[in-house]
Image 1 (cartoon, chains in turn yellow, brown):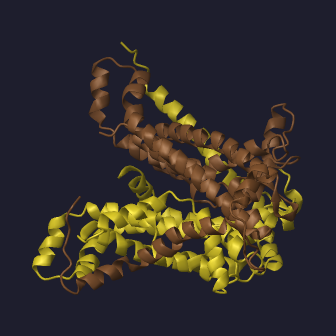
Image 2 (cartoon, chains in turn green, orange; image 1 turned 180 degrees about the vertical axis):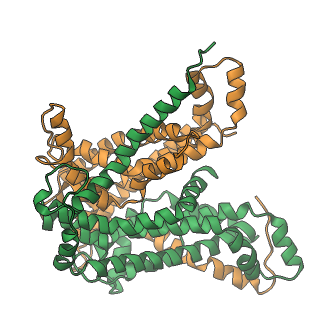
Image 3 (cartoon, helix red, strand yellow; image 1 turned 60 degrees about the vertical axis):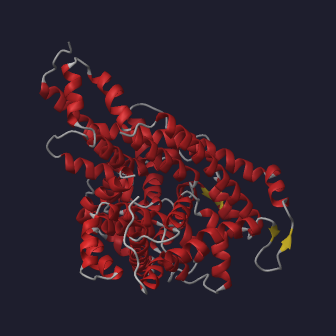
Length: 278
Length: 295
């Protein structure tokens, strides 16, 4: 028989480990924040509280990088457009695959699933060539237009959720003469809000954090490019000036952290949704 | 498979409107791209002068291309550390946080923060932590009496990039494992306790087999991520002329295609990457049949 340890000892150990983990995973954020609030001359003091604290770095950031607000805006509206495109087009296809009986459904769905595992880098070069041919390289179009042609991940995620909606609902509506589009709009979409929210969050985050695509399509236009590209130039511009570099990093992660605090339930549900319901 | 609603009369049109965006994406975005990449890989083309048919020469060149060989080795080394690292650490964190103590929600949120942060931001934070002379890590090592580590020097750079990347990925793995852990019925553990099973026995006989689906899913995700490693490499290992000290395959595709404008060579490299990932996935799905327990 196993000896029973006192319960409080286990709880204490759990808390100790959790605090250690929190220090590892959240500590660097605090370090970033406190560095950004220090005077440049104090950047090598290793205090966790900036004393004296200043907003000088943030003011400097705006002065030296006047494009920063516009890059933030670019990131924001590109992410918003991408999200709208994905949520609309993926849920449309997901409804067809989940609720409609049509010829070729299984074939098309299998085809879509196969594209799931194809690395996006395979599509990078032909897409670049097509966008180059269309004259879109150097514009923002290649960063959001493709979001409007669906995608395997989003379609799969929403379809799985649609499948959990009882069929009787759709059939009853059908008896009352509702059209496919009506059933999609009035029954499936409202009931699938958690899955739609999860897809929206993933898409927004993926677009906001993307570096490769803006780097390829708009490598040097500081007015049109995104905050990730702007930030990636920091190392070369401000090497060693950690206070201003961390101020820029804070500015770039703050909107996402705020978004996350308001939506974390949907977020975590969404990951669980994509991982477990297979 | 459910039968579903039958489209009536003109609803066929509505159905195809629903499907149209995805079909365009499938045709032009994905399947068309694969065919195009295959085609382009057989040309020499810089987008300016006319493309020039070279057959399989681009692939033959890859064999002797030292830069690509290096990228291939770097990708394999990176993946060999990153994939097990993410899985083991995420699982440990999930096991730790799968309790019902007070304040657990706050801890889960804190552990998840790195996962929502861009690779660019994480890299900037880590380049500050890694700074050789005044970085926090070397300060901590120094205050314990150790010698400063040259984190971003050639000996350590691979480990440093893997660490930063794992730090940025553990939160997502944790959530997947937490969902798996919470789906295990509590009475399994109660029954095992009645039979006198200890903590370790319960872990190996109940927990581990029942979360194999989550482990499988996480393995696929992190393998795909590892073979597509680009952002951390670009941010932490960049050097002059758009090159990297430890280029990976995706970095090499980027360099070949968008720095040197060798579209044929870049396509050939992308094809090799696609083949490697496909083969790995086939192996994984074989392993799934053997080891993954679905209830």
